[in-house]
Length: 70
Image 1 (tube, helix red, strand yellow):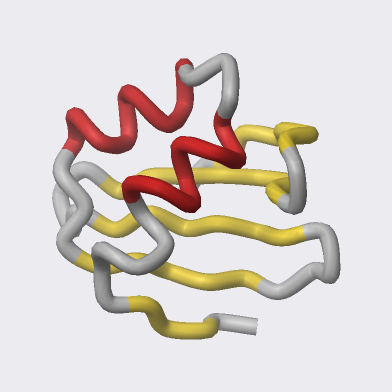
Image 2 (tube, rainbow, N blue to C red; image 1 turned 120 degrees about the vertical axis):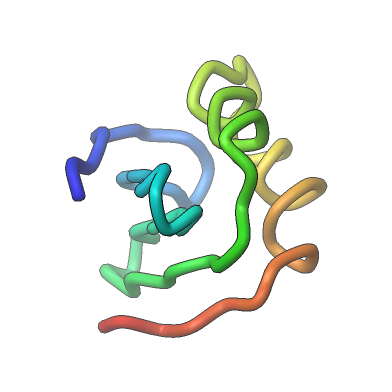
């Protein structure tokens, strides 16, 4: 999965697998978390948001099943 480097709040990189509907997020503490069942529209809005950290907290963090990868 390709990761897009970002600097938004605690987010450092984000990536998305459209086939699996999996959003991968790397945080500033190097923690890597995958969120399952994320629609492509949510990914699009997150990846283009001017307030990415706020969008993530409001629309992803507690809305989808999370699994720590690393």
